[in-house]
Length: 87
Image (cartoon, rainbow, N blue to C red):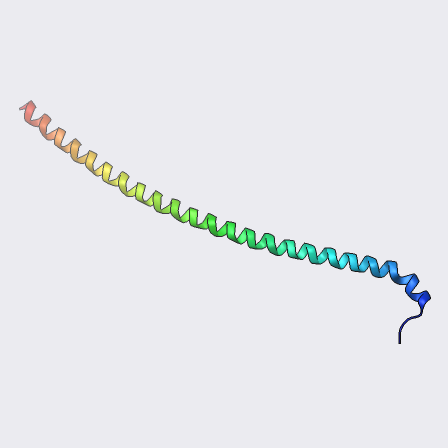
């Protein structure tokens, strides 16, 4: 059974407001999903960048260790030369 005309006239502003609110919520939800997808992509990009930087830092640490060992070797060689010259 359909409501009478007077009831429809009295309630249409409420129904229009509810429809507008529902539409606004749907738009907000869609924007939230889009932002979530965008944030996930940005997070994945940043994680990849961090991993790349971590590998570079590890490579630098290895190179610094090698340089340090080479400098120690040069220092030992110079000490031996100094001892031979001193004698």
